[in-house]
Length: 111
Image (cartoon, rainbow, N blue to C red; front, side, top):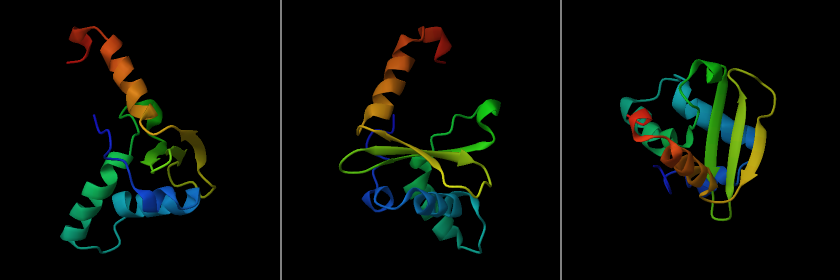
């Protein structure tokens, strides 16, 4: 799992729209950044992108940002200009639910 790798107090403290802009700009937009910057952005921000890779989620961008006091799940349609939706979570809650789900699957379904 990625427990602890989604912690970013700077992003956590930004308003939702601003955090979303930082993330989509770093992960999805080509704005002439160097290969080194692309790699640095991937290392820092990719764990925060939590969209399942199944077709029903293709139209969405979904991010989980953890801070010192909690976590924020942000989502919005790809290329939308409206404010992202937001749900507050406890720190570690996302991973706890995901781990419980995976543990409940029979072993043959996890491979």
